[in-house]
Image (cartoon, rainbow over all chains, first blue to last red; front, side, top):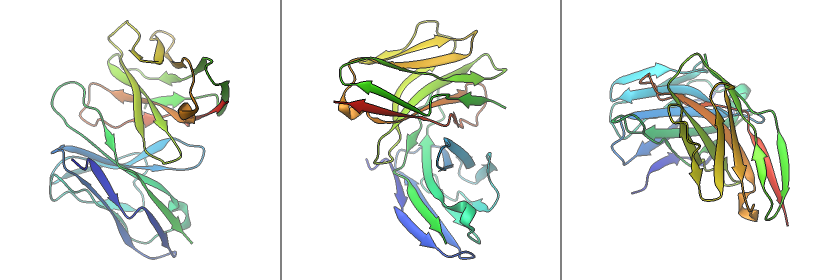
Length: 114
Length: 116
């Protein structure tokens, strides 16, 4: 099993450009989420999904869009990149059966917006 | 909303010694989970240990153990016999057990240095 994969690992954008961060998991997990990590701060939730076709906002959703057309994939879109979106982005997934399900994290994408 | 506070931005420990990382949290819920994650320079988030709030017994995983004080809303991590490979950022995290959101709320992290 590959677990949670993210592409690309690094990306540099210019202000105003758009791009999509890819996230995929092969564990048949229903729950997927995106976090951003800024220096001196912990991870903060951007968006999450409890299943295909269902998404919702997290703590810091502005400037980001998501969709969930399949169980496996949960892409994060930046429509018009801003320097404030320079960060490390993590995707995570977990199952939803039972009372506890560990969240598995991808390796992260380091994004720089100039 | 829940908050998680880690008041020690950096800690240092000698190899083979014991170190304790502090974490406090604020919640109005009675049923939740608490976690410690390790983030080495590779950036990978690694689950170290977890604690269910309804369990009074403190969780242990080999050299890692927690001191969970529910009334005080405190959740510290003790690392015994510290090793060079323990050097990393450590994040305390909270998750509600009563909602379907499963989102984690993280503290700001503690950078642990291990001196040889």
